[in-house]
Length: 101
Image (cartoon, rainbow, N blue to C red; front, side):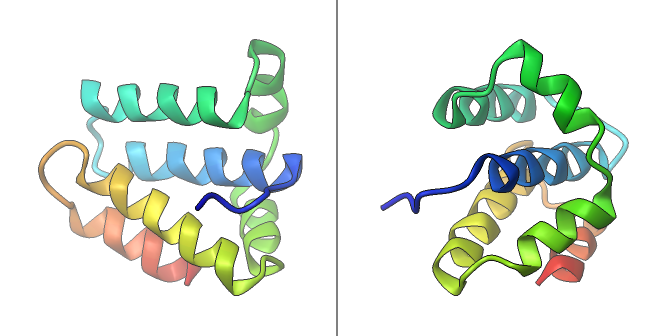
């Protein structure tokens, strides 16, 4: 079951998913598909993308740190799914994910 996320939490998740997607230096089409799916599920609009782009990794991590365990477990699974999308979990992707949890 998907926990109820605030707008700030959704934006932080997307910002970090973007970092994970870029971590190995290659943006795979399956990663882009997954990101587009997350945009739809979270109801993110084109206008929201600018706000998300203005969120730095320190702010995003701070927002994640404030989440309850149920949300953090859900978010960790989203991050792991992004890392697996291209068929290979790059060490830089795992390093980023592990640094957040």
